Amino acid sequence: MRHRLLPRHLSAAFWFASLVLVVVLAARLHGEGASYLGIADASENVVSSETSAEVVGVWATPGQKVAMGDTLMRLRRPDLEVRIGDISRQLQGAMGNATNTNLDVDRRAAQLRSELDSRRTAILGQIRSLEEERGRNRELVSNLKVGGAGGEIDSASDPMLLRIQGLRRQLAAEEQGTAAQLEVLRGGGGDQKKLAHDMQAVLSKELALLQAEKERLLLRAPIDGVVGSVNVRTGEKIAPFVPMLTISPRNPTLVRGYIHEKVYGDATVGDSVEVLSSGARSGIVRGRVVGVGARIVEFPLRLRKMPQIAVWGREVAVRIPPSNPFLLGERVTVHRLPGKSSP
Image (cartoon, rainbow, N blue to C red; front, side):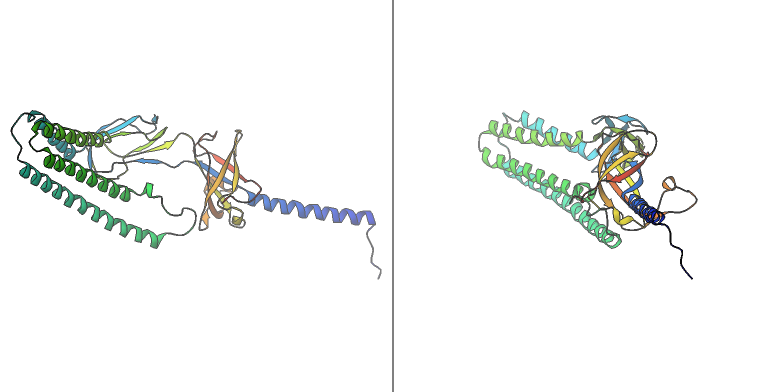
């Protein structure tokens, strides 16, 4: 039986159409990997206190727009107020004793050392407790952590480490203050007026440090933004580093994208991307991939073409500049730009 051959021009057209189809399918598959949907989001700033305190005033409400430096709430520390009162009285006494008889140097020095030893013991005890608790927490986190996007937590965001550092600074300041007072006592000799003036200077410096610590109890907005939640009320006593309120930036700073599990390898940390609104709004901003999830997760309903059908893939975190046209929670499209990933 003889095979019927297609005319030459029909055969060429067939092969050309096949080639076009292959190119279109390849481009479509590549497009699915190079582009993915996401939601514009922002990291909340948590406002808390480094020490135990009492809330004596709250001037922030959820949804309120605030500017950096706006007063949000005031706290009170009774122990700090007692210490300020004690130093203030000592300062007044030093000023009044400028012309009095010689001070009992040995008695005063022994008292200063005793007070310092007592405060040192209390502070070192707090530091040991925090270090032990921090060690247990780090061990627990290391056992639970899954490798991937986040990396190690920055020390600047570790509340226990910040508290430990604050206690060490406090101890150093108190030791320095006591040493200065002892030096004044030893070197004052018979010049009572000079001794009184030197003592005034030392006490004034210590009082200034305590007043600065008291000023930090007036909590202010760390950024321009919108108050998210307010978790405390006036009269409530709060523990260190308990979240009292949250503030979100007015504009998104992060895109949480989701890339299909079949092509998740097309997203790499360091990729340069373009982000644009998925709706009718205009505006394109440049961004950079800062994290790729370590496991496969289910897409949010908003990002599915068919909500009733579950879709799975990896979460991709994209950092974008604060000056952007997007709304918090807006659906966006992320396009990977050609070229190699940045280190």
